[in-house]
Length: 177
Image (cartoon, rainbow, N blue to C red):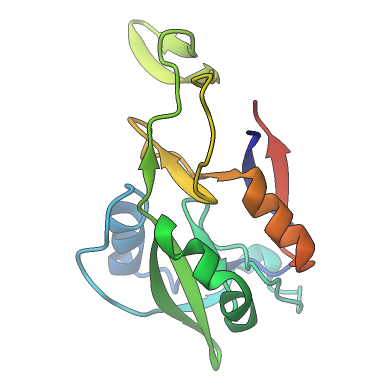
């Protein structure tokens, strides 16, 4: 099974929070670690300063790379396919409700014996090349990698096909295996 990472399509508006320290801490400490959110709160989103001139918002608005933000119509179309991969947290942009998928599904897919790491003065500083276990099958559509929960989630070929089937905008996919 093919695995993909994603990035956001820069042709569309990028959303962010109102620069509050509490919002940034909530995102960093609760929505990027592969666990359920302890605190339930609705973030109010605004356009980032770099994309303020862009008016069109994608089906998957660019927001935060550790999970996916879905517009209401996208949530209605594919939300049921993603519910086993995490929890949906409501957010607001103008008068629209958006849904952030906090990815809590963690799968042991990385072969750490063969993965190549960047090391500087004895400290692990990054990943040079990921290698995966041979037996990758029946993976969820989106998930985090075990022992790398602080990294953005990966998506399966099934997810890429679903996005293509519905012609949803806002994401670019890159095959990584």
